[in-house]
Image (tube, rainbow, N blue to C red):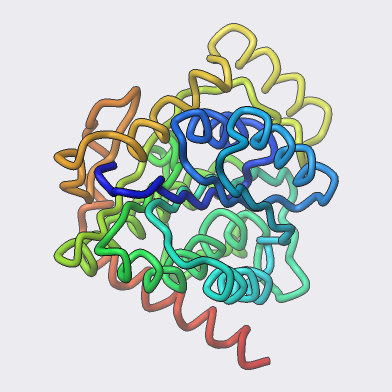
Length: 287
């Protein structure tokens, strides 16, 4: 980044896995790290680690339950009050749920956390990026989006739930959202990209999963997976690369541009998903 003062990054889900390593690596690169996690104890521990690797910056941690739209809205409003600048947003939070479950707001959990949380947060934080002359949005997606079967009439998988399919669908939503963001705000210097971090040895396959699923995830990542340190390379790259990388609306893997599924380039699909997500948000916020 070519700003005079140290850049500020906001990372969701930074208390473990890829998000935690991304936060540490950016702190080492002299970023001021603002982050969120759902567990207060883990937020404190992450804050201590960040202060250890870079005590010169005023890192901050927030506790938020991002499966809830109203919590994402509350957090965004808090950040708008607390921060005077923001240069990079990294949307990293994500999960896979073995069984179909609904939040207290009536949303399917995978859809709520993987898509609606960044949809609410990033849009609300655009003014912070704008007031500093632009910035970057980095969406952590997945190569699983290639197997998505996105149905705009069934975004919450009510017709038949498959954990892996719904995860893939929400990861496609991440890329559609990033591309739509870039089209809307790219001319203001706000560039959005998405990425596949690699098959990373994290706990995502253990959480909210039954024993066979946990075993399968362990075996798969044990022999095919990469470390969380390696998994953080691409989000860190997109946050720190020279300004020329900021062409936006691209999908990256292993720090290189890669061709995504053709559907994510469909402008009508991008706009339809945006409109339906806005409607869902408005319905929840009006209750």
